[in-house]
Every structure is written in C-alpha cells, then in structure tokens.
Amino acid sequence: MQTHHLNINDPAFVYDPYPTLADLRENLPVFYDEVWNKIFFLRYEDIANLLRDRRLGRSITHILSRDELGWPPPNPLTRDFDHFQENHMLDNEPPKHTRLKGLMMKAFTPARVEGLRGKIQKIVNDLLDRAEDRGQMDLLTDYAEPLPVTVIAELLGVPEEDRHRLRPWSAKIVKLYELGYTDTQAKEANQAVVEFSAYIKQLADERRKKPGEDLISALVQVEEQGDKLTPDELVANCILLLNAGHEATVNGTTAGFLALSRNLEQMERAKEAAAKNQPEFFKLAVEELLRYDTPLPMFERWVLEDFDYKGIPLRRGQEVALMYASGNRDPRKFADPDRLELTRTDNFHLTFGLGIHYCIGAPLARLELQTSFQTLLKRLPSIHLATDTIEYAGGFVIRGHKAMPVAW
Image (tube, rainbow, N blue to C red; front, top):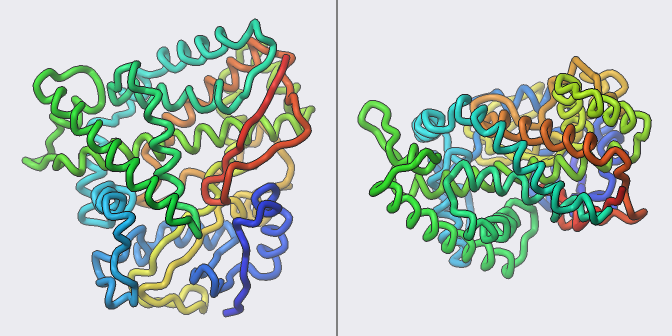
C-alpha cells in the first residue's frame, strides 16, 4: 500500500477539498497516512462496502485493550468525554449498539419526527420574521444555527430559557472529532460534557416525577423486554442527538446556500419552485445539496478483525478514514458529479452513512432542510451573499463556516 500525507486541516484544503480529492480518487484511491495513522479510502464503492462490513466498527476497545492496541493511558483531560463516548450508540458495536439503538428508536419514532413538521415551519417563520425588515442577516447565526438547536430543544423538552446553552456546549464537544485537537479544546469539551450531563440528568429527574410529551420523558419510560436505558446512557444519547442532530443541518444549510450562490441557474430554479410552492422539488434539491458539498466530510472506522479487502491487508486495530466528500463526487457513481443538479434523481449519496450506523436523525435533518430552504427562498426571493470572502471555522471533519452574511 502506498503512503501519502493528506493535510486535511490545511485552510486551503478545507476551503475547497474537491480538486485534491478528485486527483487522489483517480490516482491514489487508497493510501496509508503515517501522520494520522489511518488508511484513507476515496472511492464510493469502497466506502459503501466498508460502511456495511461488520468487520469494521466505530469502536475497538470492546475487543482489544489499550495495552494490546499500544495506546497510552487514558487522557485525564477527557475523562468525562470518554465516559460519554462509552455510553452512546454511535460509538458502540453490537450487542450494546443494538440494544441502545433499539431503545432510542422506540422513542425517536417516525411519527414523533413527522409531528415536528408544524413546529419546524413555525420556527423557520419566526426566524425570518425577526430578520425580514432588516434586509440582511448572518445566515449562520441568525438562521442555520437556531433552527436545528431549537428543534432538538423542542424534541428533548428543554425549556426556552435554557436553550441558549445548547449550541456552545455542542460546539465545544464536537471539536474532539477533529484530527489534531489541542489540550485547551480537550479541556473545554470535557467541561461541556460535565455541564451538559448535569443538565440532562436534572431534566430526566423532573420528567420521571412529571412526564411530558417530550423525548426525554419517552426515554425515561421506554422499555424493551425489561431493559431500560441507564441514567448515563440516557444522558449520553441525548447529548449525541443534539451534536449529531444539528451539525449536519447547520453545515448543510450554509454549504447548500453557498453552492446555490455559486450556481445561479440552480438558485433561480430553486426560487421559482419556492414561489410555486413545490415541496417535491425541495426533497430532491436537499439530497443534491447534501451530496454536492458534504456537511460532515469524513468518518472513521476501526478494523475489528484481520481481512483483505480487494487485496489490501486490513489488520485488527488499524483505523480507516472514509472520505464521504470524495465518494459523493465519484464519477463512477454519479453522472457529471461536479455539477450541481437540483433535480438529480439517481442520488444515493453517503452523507448519512450506511449499515447499522446509518444516522437515525436523517429524516429530521431532511425535514428541517427542506422546510428551511423552501421558506427562505419563498419569503426572500432576492436573497444573495453579501460578501466575497467565505471563511471556514476550523478543520475538515466538522466543516462549518465562521459566518455567512446575506442581504435582500
């Protein structure tokens, strides 16, 4: 296997990774990066196959100890963060993952998500009501961020006066999913987990005494064959819902609007569909925007047992990096993949994953994005970028923007 170093945190790469990814996808679609100690895969077929392969998983310490892996002792700076990781479904494998996901899905039902449709529309309308007369706003802080955070808060049953605390907690926690985070970021993430956990425990205690219609009340009560979520599992999975439940939507909103702004013909088609109230158009459009500029561009998996994949030796304890952003632009899968085509129908993208770890929040993210884009373009048909300079907030794994000024 060839070696190559991809500096995914290079600001120039974060700003526009697609030319580099296209070159690697054609000429070096699999390589080992000694700096990150990961094997990178860049083609759609390989990523899709490995996501479905149960010989890889999101965690490894359930089958190998830290000593066996050659890892140093746990970092005391991330003790509470590590405990959070151990108790949510995303970073666990069967049978624990199966149990946790089954319990979560009993509460996080399609009917509960569909029941949020009216609330999502009201939140979107309220956000636009506040901004409309100003003639300008920051699409990130005034629209993209408040929408999913408010929706998740509604879902969990977080009182309105406490909701301002959720986004800062989440923003600090997700820094630890980047490669090469600092000790300062580790301390801040750990403290955010401590504070967020204490808050969710308090809410859960209140819901045990006085249940409501919210998800925390449902999770407190949910049971499967005598099995319940432990207090730590309930807390960890509620935090996971906020983190995973809004990062894709926030980044998907700003990245999607940026893509439309750089493809004005497609922007005009979207505005026309919004004016004509065509929700079916936006169902397709959102899938294309999620493919075209992937909100969470890379996910990792551990190799759980030795095997060869297409002649490539994968050994237990190794880590693979699956470049969703590259797979979503693979011409072997998508016709003319670098072209934004909002009515694209053959669009089985990788953005929400595949296999047992497929994102349970995907229906909610889709509903939020469809509603937010359709309403935004209908109510503000002259909306446009108000800057020539777009900056990204940090690394590649959580690829979000610093700001996105718009005007109308």
